[in-house]
Length: 207
Image (cartoon, rainbow, N blue to C red; front, side, top):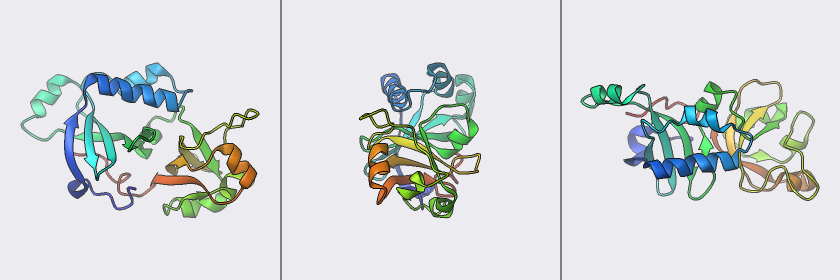
């Protein structure tokens, strides 16, 4: 999704996010990541200054926060170039997903996560999708299933960590539930949409 992303050529429009839309984004994040604390998200995405929404291609939205500390600072910068930091993104009606830089900067935020085994690491950092054995082999892990209720549903967004590594490697969406991954143990388990070293990871700010 972002392998060759270039903010100077791939962004078509930009719009300041309305307060009601920003509340909806925060609600979606909390729904997707129920262990996240509401007060931490308020610090991460304060009401002012509002988010800026950038359209990437026909179906992708990139949400960025202003790096200015307050509205007065924004006012002083308006004649220059205000810088925005990418923090979340969303494809179509899919989950609102965090950028890896955000995950690395706020390790205490409890995003839903999975861990792949060591053998999957070179493939993940190359942008490959994650096969089921990478999650079920020794060293891999997913949230536990509760009877007929899977720990992760198909379509859920997850932060991907790796066995023996401290920092996240990728962001992805579940192509099947965690229960299906455990039972089938073949095929693509997670679609990788953002990974270390891709174009989005290399984009620290957008002017």
